[in-house]
Image (cartoon, rainbow, N blue to C red; front, top):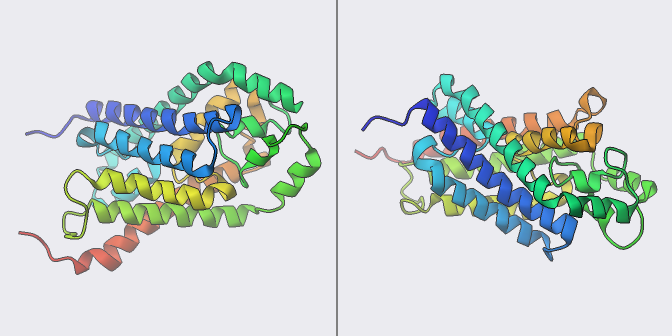
Length: 284
């Protein structure tokens, strides 16, 4: 049987990333804008289930990378064709943008009501509390929307002082490194301790849920450049402007949410392939 064509694989990556972002960022919308979730774990487990469903849905066609960092790590360590890297990444970002647009259409009246209640103007300081439904921030600005009072610039400054760009970078590298290490482990055919065939997506999803539970208060737990950049780009166009995409004024969106996950995925994949994989006997 011939492998799926690049066209079918790209469509699969687009749809898989759409599923991931629609459910995952949808849970963030529901929590931040409507207060539908009662705790971080509820959001975290939705992200985990979203990843599991996306992998089951498209994995047999494209491998369900649904993450540029994993695509690059697969190229570096597992021989993924270089010719497919950019098409996969473009498809992943496109799927994330379309999912963000769908969520905006559904939630925009609620977003506007939240902003009005907090006395913030979209695209101005303070609107991070709603922009966080799309792009990510360090530390997570969700607490700015807590309570009944208006937005406080003083409280915002105090919150931002708790997390430097360097510390956020380390958190995203470490989180993505752990994720890639687990992905490489549970999908390794040499690994006799890996989950039974077909169960790997469950453990990948649970890994993401656990990582979000630990790191989301610090960086919103990205681990995926498409997950951040696609929705962030949409939010910039949809009215948040430089709050969503600061450009060269604040490069955290680039260093923490694009470069760090790529570095982490390459390190995590390499750690498994160099330190652990050679210990498994080759199956005939």
